[in-house]
Length: 298
Image (cartoon, rainbow, N blue to C red; front, side, top):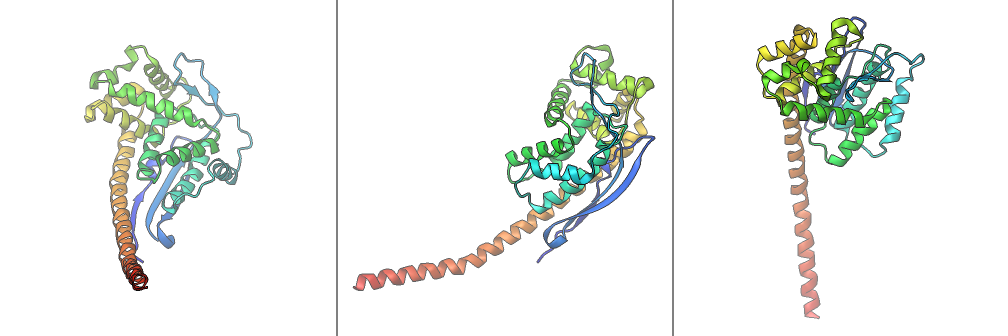
């Protein structure tokens, strides 16, 4: 059987900070354990959720409250309980690997939920699951995935949507001048800037970098100078963002190539099945025709 193979790094999903844990894993997607290979390297982080007293509904403060985090096996079992239907192997393999990595982020003590992080994760999830046979099932899998991590999938979706809608109405100038304006998203960004500036806990991650990239993309503000000013306004190291976005762009390019190879493979297999079915259909037609002639002779 033909093999579809493509390799690319999933390090765009890395979570990093001064306190970091490194873990690498390889997941193989495709028929008979061959196929599209995803190499993932994560620098992970941590946990505990506490509602914010901030005026912005988008802001959620997270603090350590987990003394005995659940094992990875429990999170994976929770996912299976939430979503009981079979998942095609090409998607299921990467989801299982991804949930293991995010479990390690989620249940580390310094983990902090962040609306920009949420936008980054939702963006990556949608790109990974693009082309899934059912949109309804894709959403159900997302909900099961986030619930398995003991978080709120509705909050992820809602925060990501609010940031996307806000970004579509912005200009290059207004994106970087959020601190001078009032609003729900502006409040969330101000909170991030304060924490990143040393007035609270802030955990930079590559999901966060992808969230920033998505904001700029939707605001049609892709100039490097705008990214530099936005990073400065948020008190985020632009060099880290640049590095992580380079990895992310490379990931997107190779993901597109992998999906094209997969589509070609699926189309070839479908054509082969149709070709094998044609002789059978011809035989059935001949048999039917002969049966009708015999009946007419009677």
